[in-house]
Every structure is written in C-alpha cells, then in structure tokens.
Figure 1: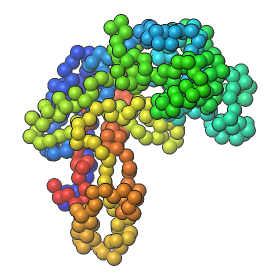
Figure 2: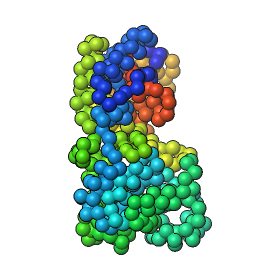
Figure 3: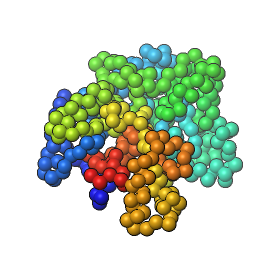
Figure 4: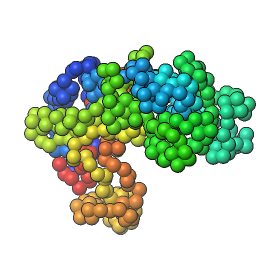
Length: 396
C-alpha cells in the first residue's frame, strides 16, 4: 500500500502579463517542476490555475469610467439603490466608484451586523445588548449611529459606513441605510442594483414583486465591452478585484477553452490523462473572524470533464467503529479495502457515508488550491494535486 495520500504542491511561475500565452507558460512551469523534482505524473492528477492570471493575460480589465457609462445606460443615472454590497476595499471600492460616477444619487443599503460573506460592522453580541432585532429593525445612518456609534472592521480597522459614504459622495449625492429587509430600499428608489453575490436572484425577485421598476445585479453590468473595456458575458462585475487606482480586473472569460487547451498540452507531455481547472476563492469560512471566503460567483469558472460530480466515499471512522470493530491488524485492513472496492455507486443517505463531504469536486479542489496558493506573496498561482482520487484500497 502506498504510504502517501493526497499530495498538493504549489508551483512557482513567472509574472504573467497581458497578452502572454498562458497555456504554454503554465505547461512549461509544471513540466519544469516535475522534472526538477523527479515527480511522476499519473492519471487524474490535477493542475489548477488561479483565475487572476487568466484574467490578466486576457487583459480583462475595466476602468471606473467605463463602469459608470454602463451603469448610466442601464439605470438611467438618476436615483439608484445599491443593495447589500460586501465590505471590502479590494472587492468593492472601485466598483462603488464606478457606480457613483454613473448616477445622480446613490442609496446604499448595508446589511448588519455583517455583510453576506461575514465581514462584520460590529460584534453580533451587541445586538442582544442593544435589544435590536436584525430581521425587523431598519435604520437611516443617523438612527444607526445613535445606537452603534463605532463600526470598525476588526481586521482592517476601517469604518465601512464612513468609508463608503465618503467614497460615494465624491461623485454623487450619497445616502446610507441599514436593513436586512431586501425591500426597504424601495422606500427611496424604484431602480436598484443588487450587489449581493449568492442571493442576488432572490433579491431581484423580491424587489420586482414589490413593484421595483428596474432591477439589475452586478452580473448585468459590464457584460459586453464598453469603450474597449474587458467584460464578462455571464458574471459581469462579479468576481472582480481592484487592479489599479482606477480599474478592476474582471473574472476571466473562456475558462473552459483554456483548461481544455492546457489539458491537451499536459497530456501530450505526460502520456497520462490529467485534469485541469481554474479556481478563484475557496468555499470555506474562518471560524475566528467569521468571514466566508467565497466572494467570487463560483469557485471554479472552468474545469475539465473528469472533475464533474462530487465524492462518493465511505466514512472509514464509522466502519472502524462498527463493521470492523472486532478485527485488528492486517485482517482489518483487508476487510476495509474489500468494503471500499465493493461500495455502491451512490452512497447518498447511507450510514456508511455519514460525515463525508457532500460538495462538488471542483469546490473541494478549488478550496484546497486557494488555501495552498494563498493570496499573498507565495508566488504559486499554479497548483499540482496528486492522489486526490485514490482511496485506501488503491495500491498504486
């Protein structure tokens, strides 16, 4: 039996620039790492590439002025509501700038005590101390400040109410309200941009049902090029990040075409069938800070067919405590292997699979890749994963 299970390696890469042939450069980086470290590639090895380098080489950028032009064209540019933006300078400050430039008046509705992905305005326990019901109580900024005078983000030290208000007010009349009631914003305007990421379609439906005239999501903005900008036909502004003092990098386009081309090149080199994917944010939550990492619309915008589906695994701990409780040593090992080899094709709702992870393979692999590459200066935007699809019964 092999002594190693899943192996994950961050692969160092050059600094990718707009116009680079990313397929060739990623393949070259993987091949160099494999040859220098005597790594033997096998069927079902996975090469994952961060979405950032794909978007960069595509030149998929948009300036705040280009965003503003699209916002004005699609909303009319009068009084516009901005619903549930996340609290992030990296993710949202430039988007807010572009939206504010495109309207006369902006009503920003923030959720509380935290945004959709867990960035907190204040400690949730203050709700109990102040007797506030977040599902019922809505506030103007003045009303809110009387109860919660300080809303400093614990990690960044930023007061996001103040930051967003000042940023928006540089370009238009700007007002902030705080409410978890999606339809509260309709008291101020019938034209709304839903900035929430994973609940956007529910928000749109609720607003339209309550009589909103125009409801867009961030996915409806920058869906085609504006004055030569980048764009994304499906996700629009979702998945974007701050790039420069006046632009954002959008989520990459044509990720499926990229992974198929990369897979072909790597398979030709290795002689085995490898899988490839593009990954963004992982789907996990920080148990201390409460931040849910997934601010992208999906974990993986593109992957090869061998990564479809979700795991179908037995829970070894359950089997050890039950079916194999009277066996020891080699007898227990062989019995476990036999059970794995004979497991059903679908273990849904069976005791032997309780506690396994019912998530898509791309979400699991993308999260693993994101944790490995990090978001700082490791310099490993390419991840090589081996043995992920092997189990306890596989000898090689």
